[in-house]
Length: 378
Ligand SMILES: *Cc1c(COP(=O)(O)O)cnc(C)c1O
Image (cartoon, rainbow, N blue to C red; front, side, top):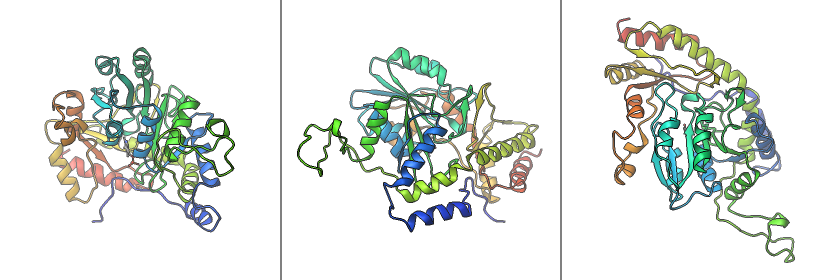
């Protein structure tokens, strides 16, 4: 039997055409396709300003923390139930990462747990839209405002989603996206940052462009000549090229289709698994309009590993999201303790992510459901 992947890009002939057109044109990078993609992304994210396109979701987080002014002595509170980069891209700026526990239902950062960990050094609170379900932005916003901290939303899973009618991208001070092939839309590698405050957005743009500025009103020396540029801040080259932005723009035209198909697949898993004992299905909060990035099934009674090995042996590409980040050796070596975020750790111990991508066939979904039902004798 063929191996069924866990996630997979959906590439159309139009996507191929859009990329080929750029390859035959004048700009491979830093041309009109970047501007276009950034404007379109800004609109999808509910912003009047363009997004800042970068080379990955990890780069987006690194840029976002730079734009927030995160540095040594600052604390960044985040969820351990996430991909490494949400935490490590703050640590690499010299900040201290503080892990707060998650909500039992969504696996998203719990505002009450965050509130208990706030100090006068808290600079950013970073939630994650786990599996595509938007974080509790109003709850986290209240804690962030009280702490005088910025709110960041790692929306690597959730572009196109919304909460209480407000699009993901407009809920937090800073929102980051990833366009890795398994995500909800792809540019191969890629990501983006949006910020509510134009000054923070400008800092993000400067950081992704090696800290260089040419804008006359940002220069200290204005009469040296037309070649002149200055570097008011440090930065890196995180520019997403035109070739990949063209792919992104083409993909964006199908984002709502992708979202609808992901919702159908989620519904099919719900229906096929609802009566199997010992499972816990993902739920949706009132007001949340998720883009399901994967299907986070929970397996009770210590039976997750057996199911994982069984499905993999049957050629079904399941995954586990996520190994709690504070368990990683780099954090353990710095005194972070297992057991410090019990809800997230239990979530991890039970979690198995089922295949989810727009081109997944109903027959494939049924094959996954069937494998699970047989494993539990249901
Ligand atoms: C994928 C992902 C990232 C990193 O994105 P890349 O594009 O792979 O660098 C960050 N956070 C979360 C939650 C992710 O799933």
